[in-house]
Length: 258
Ligand SMILES: NC(=O)c1ccc[n+]([C@@H]2O[C@H](COP(=O)([O-])OP(=O)(O)OC[C@H]3O[C@@H](n4cnc5c(N)ncnc54)[C@H](OP(=O)(O)O)[C@@H]3O)[C@@H](O)[C@H]2O)c1
Image (tube, rainbow, N blue to C red; front, side, top):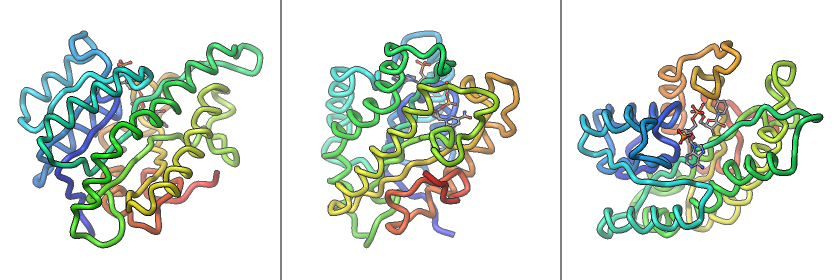
């Protein structure tokens, strides 16, 4: 089975939930990345304490401020990471940060729709634009043929709630703005996969499963721990290749319908 073998990775929204667990498990690997850029919007706030504790135990974890919905914050973070890398590249960008709002057909407002779209779609778009030079560099400098997450990849963390065919959990929560935003994120990812194919950057939309995080467990029904889910996610990322670019997969690597 192929192993995930990255020198550098960046995770957005890494102070809690899936992002924090991704950083924890990446740092715990025997072949752990040399640079793990764990980004979050408020590194000095109480919500980042768990991430700070983790970073204190692992030399490779570097906490970088990054609010994915703010263009200036994204640009500043890209400049800091570029400087820290001292000429090295970025193999893996995980656009994980996301928000949900309990909106329904009756209660949704234009403001809610725009706010959720801004974080869940504009965020991954802006972050990818700013970190693209570092990803391109990784692809260019890699001796590997084809595409892989170990070489150069963009992983957009989406949701099966945004699948127009499946509408995961409709009977439990309508979450209108969230569903629309994740459907749009899927289109963004497909476009990225076409646009960046010539650069040999793998682009994937990944449904992480229904996991016990603040977001996933609002109805106290999430069936899987974040630890188990993230183990599966990392195994799946290790197995992706160019045949997978532009596809919508779940944590087990199974293709999902749009
Ligand atoms: N858990 C599930 O069952 C599930 C299922 C399908 C998809 N997902 C997707 O998985 C991803 C992670 O979800 P989760 O369950 O870990 O959610 P979570 O526990 O609510 O954590 C969300 C993370 O995103 C961060 N974030 C939100 N807005 C941000 C912004 N503008 N800039 C930077 N960071 C921001 C949060 O930071 P703060 O602490 O600063 O708010 C937090 O670190 C999301 O994209 C979500 O849609 C989750």
